[in-house]
Length: 276
Ligand code: NDP
Image (cartoon, rainbow, N blue to C red; front, top):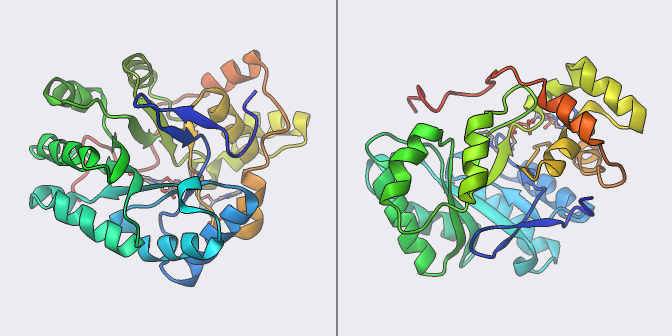
């Protein structure tokens, strides 16, 4: 049983990554993001997922500094944006992220999207960053099988993480199996389907058995599948409630039942057709 909000998975380079964290996409810079991060740290979260494009790294960094929790106890993820990949300025983008965060390292730096014709060079830049010690781990995001098959033969360092859209209605079983076999940790974005799991009857029914919500059942399912989850909320009570998943355990049959809900249905942009 996954024990607590601080439980970790070991990445292939030995770094411990919390299985649960706070996402801050569309959480506004300033008071909104500072509050969300503060509430999460107070509730026991020890991982925050931001990105250059979210335009809130400064607020994330400030909230962490003001929390009183030692920096080394918090796992901070950020990501290089597509325009930096296209203009070949990944290293500069990384420096800007560190400056905005006011940190001298991040725990995980990700290639945000597989920008065709550029992601291999971007990855080489991430390898350089990793070897400089300023990112404790590096990884990719939104990389499908085709992207990994193109990238992996050209890497010196295997990505430690692939952060993809993953939830009960989108489970990409082949990609998930590939990553698991290769030793690439899967991380789920939109893990609660942007709130829409609350409408899924099977998840609600399962929740009522345990006195839990559909959101909590979904997040518990991800933990038991050893997939990192970073649900986002800007509301204190939801930030607390979303993490209240360490006092029950789904049976193997219930995990399989949620596995069977897969519909190959995306909520967000497709990694094959995105243009931004
Ligand atoms: P989520 O699946 O985490 O859902 C977030 C939405 O659900 C918000 O609208 C939130 O509203 C609502 N919500 C949160 N808790 C509850 C609850 N208990 N009951 C009902 N509704 C709830 O989607 P995200 O897209 O935010 O994904 C999570 C994180 O993943 C992002 O924040 C970001 O860090 C990362 N991400 C990465 C991407 C990538 O390309 N790598 C793409 C997209 C996201 P409210 O805030 O009002 O509570």
